Length: 258
Image (cartoon, rainbow, N blue to C red):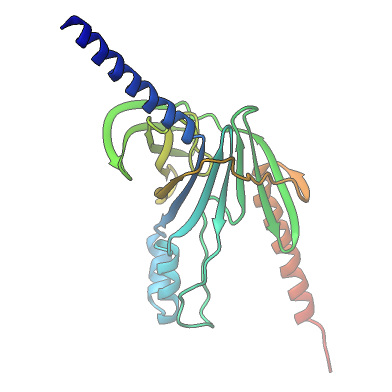
């Protein structure tokens, strides 16, 4: 009886070992598709102005509830790329302005967990830039809350900084400390994340819609084309570029062609 018990325990231990090996081995090469949404509520006085004009109502909706966008994330070992997926607009009116919102930008967010470096690429009216920055430190607090996403048990973690609150759900069985956009640093892959602004009614949300395990190393794109900057500089670069374009437009409007 004791010999049978020992054999059974050995088989059980071997099964657990093989299962853990398969999870840790396969999970190093993953392809995940995330849906990203933004919810921004405009101040009441601005909302009234939009609601007063029929042609502005659709713009209000696009500001407050824009269509979700999609990102593809590739993970191979310690490297990952998080890439915006371009889609054709379903807007029925080709002349109506479409407000595109992409919380992680319209390019690629690259992370290397080995050297704690993050890169992003930007295109400002045809001029290319790429940023190189240290990975953001979140200071996560892990809670006891659990739920399920795509068949995986996920656990809740929270953090905050001077500008926002962060809530994420990570899957311990996908033992990769990575996630969408800037998220990382937890004992499992982040499958859902939300950022809530402290200064306005603004929320960013990411949710994994599919996960594919790959048996080979994936090609990770590392942004390195154009002018190197810090990511925090891109807003100022955009503002300066817009000012130059507006000035050129005003100057051309003022030219007498008679």
